[in-house]
Image (cartoon, rainbow, N blue to C red; front, side):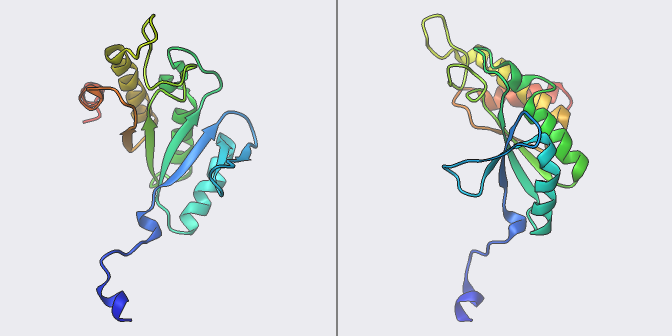
Length: 171
């Protein structure tokens, strides 16, 4: 009783952000072996997941996308109908009050696995990558994302993303 009276940290499900890994397909709920209890989920599985989270008091999710195809330009990352953008719209349809955070990075969408575009010599090309990260942030915000969470390693990304969001009306 004494410890509970003076403890500084108190965890509550309303403070948690639950990771969700969204993928293409229908009726997909594939376990992630390295993350027990986590699954790759298709869009049609998100309503069930969101309702279960709400039932236990979790009010925020962090989306990670698994694209249908990867390419050198990470095309699906910033497509208006990309997997994360579609997931945001579905989660907001199911529960408009759910806080939806999106991971903004190109590594999962590129066929080479780097956080940005590559030069012809194989080096990461920072400045052109900023444009694509900014486009991803804007399309996610347009889809209804509440928080943009860049996890890439590009220099100047925060300023570039902020400027793009401001220009798109997401001040």
